[in-house]
Length: 119
Image (cartoon, rainbow, N blue to C red; front, side, top):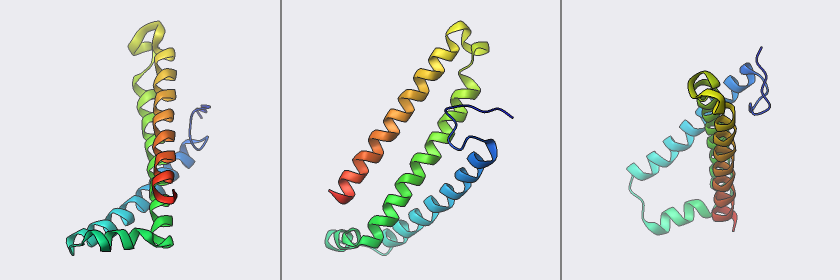
């Protein structure tokens, strides 16, 4: 079994499970938002919907699910395609830079979302 310090769940099975659970949470969230938008919504109704604690928690859960889903996906892309075999001797350095960059962007987005939702 391959173990990597940059893997989200420390094993392929737990990463797979996190991907599936986060995907279901994201589907539920976007179906909820989509149903609201299809029915038509004014700015006041939209604001009232997100003023409720339940919707804020659901949105935060969706954002954290998106972050976990994105991290595992980008980790898989980085480890599959940014290798020494494909990029030469600098493959490991480029993969590490890619993973640090992805982690930093995901972290910034999560902090930004917390500030928007709860600030």
